[in-house]
Length: 408
View 1: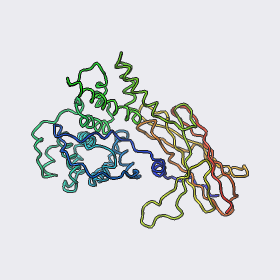
View 2: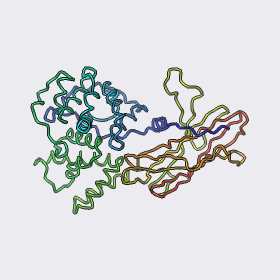
View 3: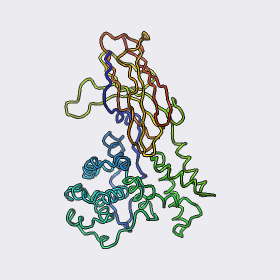
View 4: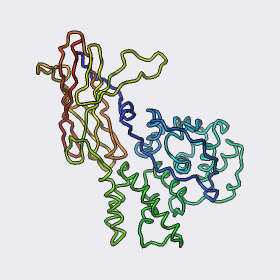
């Protein structure tokens, strides 16, 4: 039994196989023609929704968690996706969210904007409207004519301040979510947090105020599950609040605990599970990644010649103030006769040592054990044992899973 420890990412296969969706802001109704003026487009024909691909998940996470690493090297890939309407729509992000994101990205990187965008003729209408709005909002109006050869009427107006904007419509809330994704500054969401105070007057219209409060609460509840920065901000605001407002904030924070479903093997919030995949026998001939097959059930089966990828999924780890995590594990494989293959024994393998957006987001171990069953291997159950360690939170979880090698 050959057991190399290989550097590979299998999370995309696992996410698609188990139907996990990428983190994303709520996709609100289409923008109205009122200012901020994202041009309204006719809705496309309804299509059956496919599971997100690995590329879709990566693109959505690049945008939604951009502030975590501020990785400018990833930005060209986002612009490449903007040139494809279907690719950007599969992120689940509204055009207003994207406009808010690019507005702040452009503010923070003015010298790079023109090079990032390139030729305006390369973009479809919906992406073009997002970029034109973001250029206007960020004070880069001069680039609109030179790159897109257009002069929309709203260019005569002075853009508002996204930070202080008090949203009166879902589209404006999405603008602020996009700005938060680009900067990680929860101050952009302060007006949304203020809006859930039932005593705070908003627009003077009871019906509109109710809609604003509902949309603000839903957006905050959805995203607090995925953004540690937002949860810390809400905890701070709840500590400063009193009366019905504090009750509303406490209820909002409680939704994260209700929504979080840890794995059965856990130590407090920290939990994990072992995932196994049957890796392809041969690489794809077209240059793309060959498809791996997720192995489910209490005791999946394998045959001699099969290669099984073993990875550890976990969440609920502690984070330092700068959002950095440190998770490691020890691993070994025990054969049918009870002996431990020395090649499988690994101590202190790094599973995660990086910044993450939220401690409750599902993470895979970056180092993956590859088990190749050879002709001379004994049939029977092979037991994989993992001691998973949260080195920031000081928690440990013992995991185990078995796979049966068939005698044929």
